[in-house]
Image (tube, rainbow, N blue to C red; front, side, top):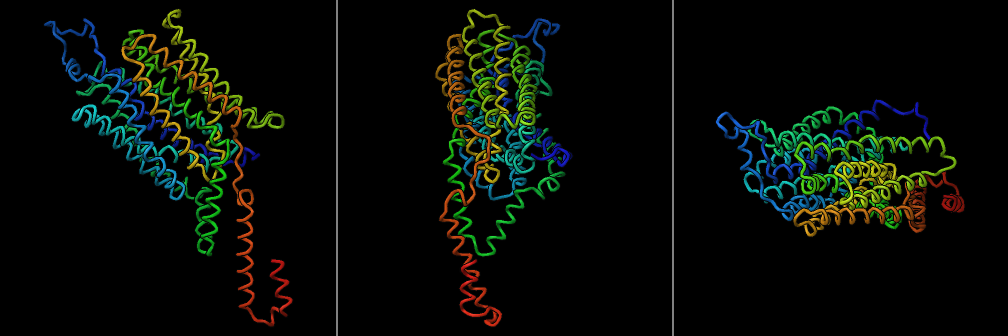
Length: 509
């Protein structure tokens, strides 16, 4: 294990900070729709203190005629549109990131996300739900490239012993985004600003912060990415191609990736990603609607209480990851990384699933008890940070972008399925309908915990040519012998000696 004093801490901290803010802004663009749908699809009852002197509503009431008449089916289609866009472009994302420049792909894809966020209010006001669907498709396509870039950057720029803790800090950007955007949209949905409603303000804020991040990234891009291991590996790959070994290298690459695909550890993260995205989407998009339908909360209360799980996630995931790293340093000779990862992953999925089942007994619970249980579920769920999420950036450093693409594809498929399940079950927003959603998500959590417990791993999978196929090694040896023999024959026969000497040299080679 590397000594901490050997790490380039300024560079590590700068990388972590930039990637955290990148994920934060990206999550704000995605999650603004959660509380935003509550804002734009419910009727706001203005308090009597807001009435003017003549008993009429003040100018701010102009927002009421802009309420969107989207039922649960339309809302589900808009939410799923982002994931459809992400799904279509994920296969291309893994290829471009693996064979291209990660920094440039991240720069272009994030800039595209900013532009789609900026245009969402415009196309929605012009084309209603169809405009919202188109903008969300665009945002999803952009995120398909940005998310694997973040994972690949973590794998390439952060040392392995610190990757767990630093990756959890980067992922905390998701939770901070939900806290900020929920309360921001709820406030401006009631008050308005410069003729804009809460949903529009949320998208414009995300676009502004995204533009600031792009400027900062352009400043530090060359410094951070010029000497990373990925560029060195790409230079070596180019050098090998120039030396005439392109066919062997391509064959090795295919065999190594096939060996990775055959690993049960890789596929154990698929159900975990399903369960993870279902839990996050439940907290992000459906808990605000659940609070509105069942408890009739005001927007400000809704924004506050629906932010609590993400507030707890922000701190608890760093706590769990730090605890995991401490256990590794303190008890690494007794407990393997796999054991620790499986323990935290089980705590996350089984614990949050059990608490969700408690929430289905809402007829016997008070409003604040349900809020407390949902917050506890989010807290326990954060233990996935030192759980299956570590596998994404440790299974294969060389193929981190492709592993991330497979992981995100599983997430996207889960994210596409859940809105249609919710749309088919929730018709009137009753307590019984919402209880079914909680039970389904809990069942998926239990299944994910079991699969990862049986097959999960955080150890790097050996995809070296020697471990994948002896035929590749044999082919390399034959090629090397032929090349050496050709070089020997080109030299002066006097310096080589007799034919027997030449045969002996070739045999030894």
